[in-house]
Amino acid sequence: MLISRESRLCTFLLVILFGLVVLAVALDLTLGILLQANTSPILSSTLVSVPAASATLLPQPESNFVLRSIQDELPRTRSYEFTVGTVKGAPDGVERQMLVVNGMYPGPTIEANQGDRILVTVKNNLPNRTSIHWHGLYQNSTPWYDGTMAVTECGIPPGNSLTYNFTFGQFFGTTWWQKWREDLTAFIAGMQYTDGVTGAIVVHPTRNVSGIPSWDEDLAVQLADWYHTFSEELLALYMRPNIGIDGTPGDEPVPDSLTINGLGQYGGGGEYFNFTVQRGKIYRLRILNTGSFASIKFSVDGHPLTLIEADSTPTSPIVVSSVTVAVAQRYSVLLTADATSNPGGLYWMRAEMQTDMFRYQQPGQNTDVRAVLRYARTYSDVPFRAVPEKSSSLDPAGLPSIDGKTELVPLQGGPPPDATVAYYLQYSFQKTSAHQFLGFMNKTSWEPLQRDATLFSVQRDPSGSAPQGASVKHEQFIIAEDSVQVVDLYISSLDDGDHPFHLHGHAPWIMASGKGRYIGQSVSNRNPFYRDTYLIPAYSWMALRFVTNNPGLWAFHCHIQWHMAAGLMMQFAVQPSTLAKWTVPEELLAQCSAVS
Ligand SMILES: [Cu+2]
Image (cartoon, rainbow, N blue to C red):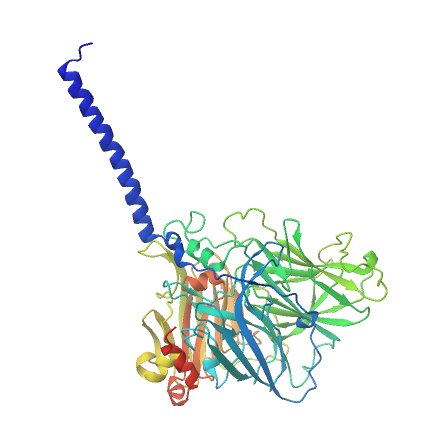
C-alpha cells in the first residue's frame, strides 16, 4: 500500500504532538507535586517525629485517683520526680504511641495543702524541649516556674532536668498540670499535652471553707477527649495550606473517643474505670477536663450531684443533674452513696463528648464513654468486671444542668474594686498569605520566641520589651502594666466557635457577657464569679476584671490545643520594673543557651 508523503508527514506530526502532550502531563504532575511539597506541611511529614517507644503504659494504682486524707498535716515540702517519656498504650483499646509521665496516663496526682512547698524535678526523655505548666496556680513571686515555654522559660532540653519549686500561697482547690511545648521545626506552636502528659493537682485549704457541706472521701475524675493519631501528625494536617485536615482549612481534628481516668471504650474494646463506694458516705468528685478540644458532659446514673467548686472557686452549693466541662475547666460535686434503683448496686458514670464543635464525621467515633460506680459490702458478690445491667435515666429528673455558660455564684464573693484601666481585645481566625487559617488576637497571631522567653526579654529591658500599654514585637502581643491597676478586658469573639480562654497567674472576675461585639454595654459590679478558665461563646463578648498585683509574664489564650497552636494567644507583662529587680534561677537561663 502506497502512503502519500502528506499522510506520512501527518502521522509524524501526530506522534510528535502525542509525545509533547505526554511530556507536558508528566511535567505538570511533577511540578504539581514539587510545588505542593514546597507549600504543604503534610508532605514534609518526615519532619513530624513520632518518638519510638519500647515501654508500655503501666496500670494505674487506685491511689492516684482516690485521695489520701492529708488535710490535717502540718505544712511541709513535697517532692516529686517526673520523667516525661514515650510508651505504647491503649487507653481505649486501640494501641498507639503516647507521651506520659512516669509511664502512667494520667500522670501522678499532686495532692498537697495550702502552704506546702512543692518540688517537682522533671526529666525530659523526649527528643524535643518540653516544660510542665501548672494550670491555675498564681506562682506569686515565682513567675519563672509557670512552665510556659517561650514565655517563662526556654524549655528543658532533651536529656536534661529542671526542678520546679513553688508554694501554693493563696491557691487551694482542684487543678491540673500539663505538658507545654513549642515546635522548633515550624512556626506552629502549642502545648501538646494531647498525647498523654497530664495529671491532677488537689490543694486542700488551710481552713475548711464555711458554707460547703462536709464529705468523706475525694475522687479525682479526669476526663479527656482522645485521638488515635499522634498530635503532631494531626497538627500538620490541621495546618495544611488551603485544605486543612478535611478539605476546609480551620476545621479542627475530631477526637476518636475519650477517657475517664485514663480508661475508655472504642469499637468493642477498652476498659471501664471502677470506683467502689460505701453506702451512706459522701464523696467529692473532682471532675477535670484535661482534654484538647471537646467539652464533656459528666453525670452519674441515679445520683444527683451538689456542685461546690468551679475552677478552684468555691460556689454556693446547687444540686445539678450533670456538669458539662469545657477544656481546662474543673468542677467539684458531692455525691451521696444512697441510691437504690439499680439491682446489684452498679451505676454508670457517664462522659459524653459534646459534638457541636466538630466540623466533620470521624468514622467509628465513640462519644459515650463510661466508668462504673459500685456499692461495696452489700453487693460484695458482684464480680469486679460486672457492669450495670440496665441504663437508668441519664439525668435525675427536674434538676438543672451546668455548663461553661452557666452563671455561678461565688461562695465568698462581693463586689470587686472599680476598674482603673480598660483594654479592648477581639479575636478571629483569618486566612494568611500562606493560605493557612491562624488565630489572631487583635492583629497578632502568636509565634513562640526561639531559645528565649518574654519574661527574660522583659527583664533585660523592662521598658523597651514591654512598654506601658499594648505593644507588638516579634509576634508577641503584650499588654504591660507597671503598677497595681484594676484592669478591665473587653473581649469580642468574631469567630463561629466557642473558646475556653485562660489567663495564667490570675482568676479574673467575669463581669458580664453577651451576644455580639462589645460596644459599650453596661457591666454590673455586684457579685461576679471568678475563675481561671471561661468559655466565650461564638460571636459573643465577655468582660473580665483582674488586678495587676502579681508580677510576671502571664499568657492569655484559648485552651483548645489546635487554636493555641494556631496562635490564639497574647501575654500580660505585670510590673516589668519589679520583675527586672528579681533574680531568675540560673538553671532557667542556662536552658536558653543549651546546645540541644
Ligand atoms: Cu479556641
